[in-house]
Image 1 (cartoon, rainbow, N blue to C red):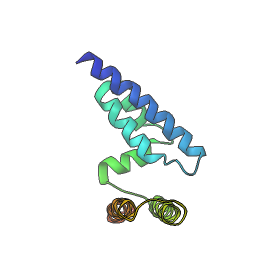
Image 2 (image 1 turned 30 degrees about the vertical axis):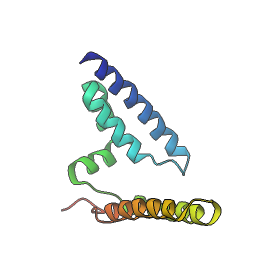
Image 3 (image 1 turned 45 degrees about the horizontal axis):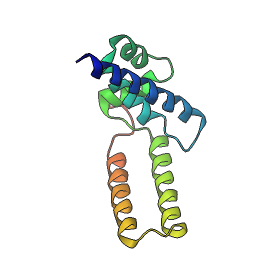
Length: 124
């Protein structure tokens, strides 16, 4: 079981790094990487899991996600907007076959549906 903990730990740091980079790059999402990092740390290191979960900056959104599955309105607008722009780019500027466009569009529509059906704030 030991090698798996090491793999989870390494991936936890990789996802954490990608999330931190995402703070500064608007095209890279921060929260999904932080959720993945938190999950990886939950499998490998209680210390780093607790550190990330209670972090001053990253902790509150992670806590809202794990307790209530909340996706803030800003994140909803940003994700739907970026997916729309990406799909427009794929359809207009690439030579992808029609079935490829349909597959990508279907996955993006499902993702949009999933994001939009999540609550936008913590229930009272």
